[in-house]
Image (tube, rainbow, N blue to C red; front, side, top):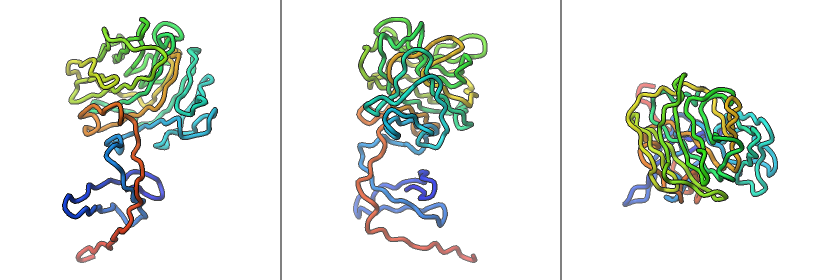
Amino acid sequence: MRDRSTGLYLGGANSDPSTGLYTFYPPDFGEVIVERIDELADPVTDEAVFDLDPSVGAVGGTLPADTRGNALTFLGDAKISTDALSFVFDGSGDVIQSASSRYTLGTDDFCIDIEFYPINGGRGSNYARLFQLGANTTAGTLVIFTGTTTPTIIEAKFWDGATYQSLANSSPTTYADNAWHKLQLRRVAGVFFMTIDDVLVSTSATTAYNIAAATLSIGANAANAENFYGRIGKVRISRGARRAAAATPTSRLLKMPADSGSGENALIYDRVIPGG
């Protein structure tokens, strides 16, 4: 169920196993869009605070916002590729930025999902930043980047203000150039889990890192000249324990629910508040 005015997710309901009936109680008297979805969709999308989908927009153009309404800033010449499924980064410093207090994850559980396609190890220079929480011109707070080997190694680190603290590292597993890969970095009760292409590649110890950044950057870091060379597809940040609880299979990763019905035969009742 989504709010018709804002498009925001209000909630959902599973069908009764005996009657097939769906029951949902809206939070107010506003109009609600009802959609029936199949079980192949990526689960728990309501916890997303950032959701970048290159297929939503004009081919060869740029997106004014992500699907959650967060404004985007493009530096350099990052464009939607001709297949409309990814952004192309040439390693020269192209970056997509966005600022919102929604990205301040603190010590909460979260999940970051990224589709990436490295070329020549994904590096325009030395390391290359796929993603960071923190402005493009800073060292960043939470950083996901490709390593210095070809095929590439993927690393995730936390900047504590003085040094980088390692959170997850795919070594010795490496990932081929010129191929799509899907990455999840999850934090559950302080423990970080990195899953790439359905394989858990790294787990960290429990440490209470406070992610205070309210800006995210995709594709580059000007402070360290760590620029990605390749393509980046969908990127999503989900804040919440349900999404972080378990890895999502590659076949469903970042797949938005598809409408397979429109809530036909809905019975709508006015609420009666005793004494109101």
